[in-house]
Image (cartoon, rainbow, N blue to C red; front, top):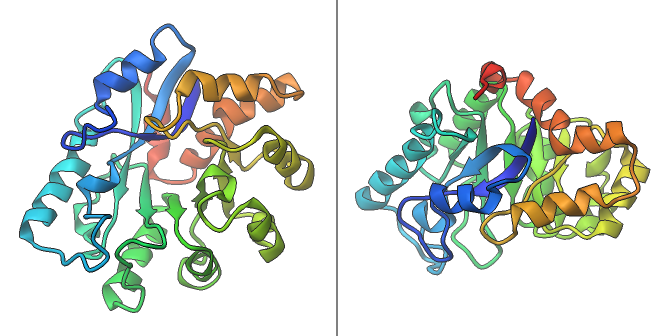
Length: 258
């Protein structure tokens, strides 16, 4: 099974188009059979308001957006739904069908309350469930999360670190050497993908597209065009994702077949 490890899918934010039907159209007649899907950022918090204050309306929308992904489990493409967590740290909404956590902000966006005891409790629940966290944050918070807050948790730094401070900065920090730090290839350059494999091996890197910002078929072809062995191509295209899922509650979904 070829799995896109990084795709966005929502019910409210339709610009750019990112409904489930849009993703299906993008992968039609391709060999992509599964996708890890996250809610769009604008369905979770107002990224354009640095002073964003949470309220019941946003909490209701977040809950609906996260639950929507669970409803896709019986469609023609296997969906691996991730739970997008925000400052209410509502891990009581986690379902056994959630395969991972999305944790996201950029430098000019509202901040996570890492000092909140609810954050500590949420990470403890994530650790208990054994699910990975796709973590997109500033470099300083990335280092703190991996090295202090979320020890023992598998962390996926997307885009080969492009939006977490950059591939080279993360390399200098030593994070790529951490056996619990994984990455995906979404929108990453071919040179950085090859450098990562040369330096850190091919067991913790996964194909991703960042749909709708990247085209799944084009991003997969980028991997297929690299000078890699057939076994390594298969590992990156889906094998590494399956192995990571097998470590947590999402492993049960790997037995699903169309």
